[in-house]
Image (cartoon, rainbow, N blue to C red; front, side, top):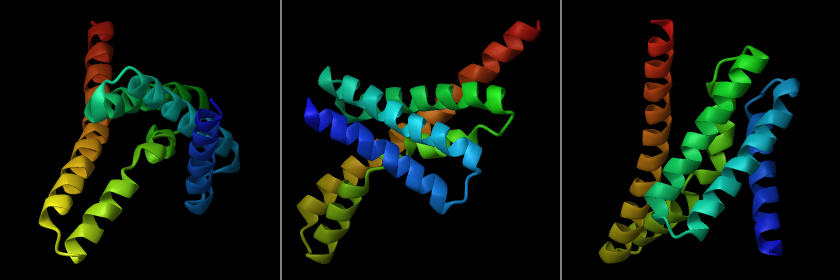
Length: 145
């Protein structure tokens, strides 16, 4: 249990740090922090139910996109201001590192394995943002009819 609390706090602090480094407005930093933490909670819940890397990251990214859309309306700010810090905890940094390390060490099998893992997670994040945007735009067009 304590491990999950530490993970969520780390995700929140990572999103906050990302917001600070990229000079987010102060009034949006708390939302970025909360977005990163809650996105990681959604990811952990999906992983707990053994949904796999692609599905877990896709669902967490869909949540982050929905969260960003809600905050976009409340704060009257572009959605990307909130979606990018919210998906920061999902970025596959360790698998990318291990893939590059295996390439440098000329270990093709390990490089392939970690490269595929990196691609799966990165693809899920990109597809999640795209899927939410498409679904949201379709719903908006239907509501206007």
